[in-house]
Image 1 (cartoon, rainbow, N blue to C red):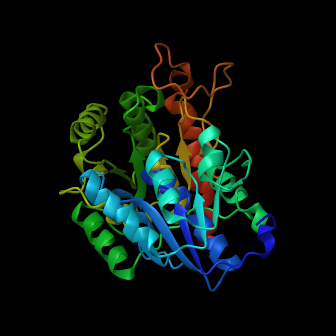
Image 2: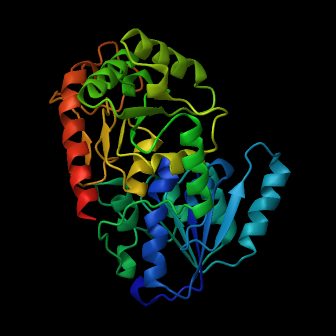
Length: 353
């Protein structure tokens, strides 16, 4: 089929295997597809760990979650089971080996993706060159043959009222009161080239506390990051912050409850990782020190800001760097100025509501 604008698929599979942030950034694809094809059944192929943030998304009808720990024959049976849905259209947003395997197994009449290698022309029968820009925009640009164009759709997380209530209890148990002002701190990252020093996070929190004693800081963490958070806690205490200023829920909340806690905040301050996309999905302002990260991860809105020094090497997307000036040239004082601007703007917006 050369003219996809006339295609009317009854069942569509979107392949976006990982990571959590990337899968969340793919969520607008389902929104625009459902608007274009309201009667179509929309399926997603992804990993089990990525499902929670897409849970309750009204635009996704069926989840196909692969367990990479299972053996070859079990995975092969999984591919066959998904393929038995008989998709009219498969859209591969990632072209990882498992995404390619799923596309091949589907035998769908229309298999759409982007040109990546000679292998792409063997697996897919419609290749679309994506546009550069915000990551969600780039993904949606693959759908232009269907007459679909990006209209600033961003990621969204659909929280339940029960989850919101649970999150408020978690925060209250940590000592957050009605008079407190919550700021979320995302200080961890597995790559040093994208991790602002913990000492600077602590110094920034002290500066914010000096501006308003009502500020409280929720220290985000993922599995295996307890030691990093305890290090940040010790740094904060050494600079004069109190235990009551630092909210560290115990035990570690699952990711949807962490998102629900974030939804209660006035601001997220962090590195370039999945929490920044969660903030965009929850309409929470964010300030990110991206380091070596590229420019495709920032949602284009004044309520989402980056501190990115003007350096000839930046962004480089390196995983390691002996002299990460893109991080080191950002001072706590620089971040304070932007954080206060975002907090003031958010306060004005809240009052207007």
